[in-house]
Length: 87
Image 1 (cartoon, one colour):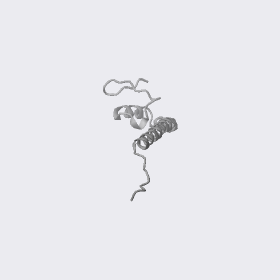
Image 2 (cartoon, rainbow, N blue to C red):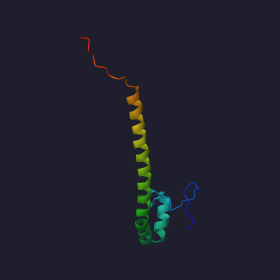
Image 3 (cartoon, helix red, strand yellow):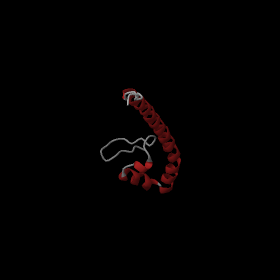
Image 4 (cartoon, rainbow, N blue to C red):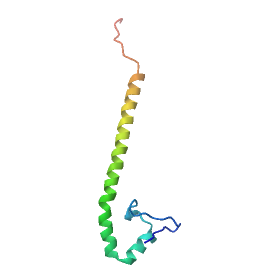
């Protein structure tokens, strides 16, 4: 079944969450068989969530490394404190 948005863009169900489908495409799928649409939705949820977990892991790892680099740069730019002895 070829799915396309109202702009003619092809929709790949392997990479797009069913909950994010355009309304007209979701209605087209539901008109075929609503039970099959719900079953497909339940099958797809773990796949989409696993991809999101990987994406968030990469994002948080990148942010952690950026934070550590920024911390090292800030520490290197701050002048060293010297104990004042001539009061």
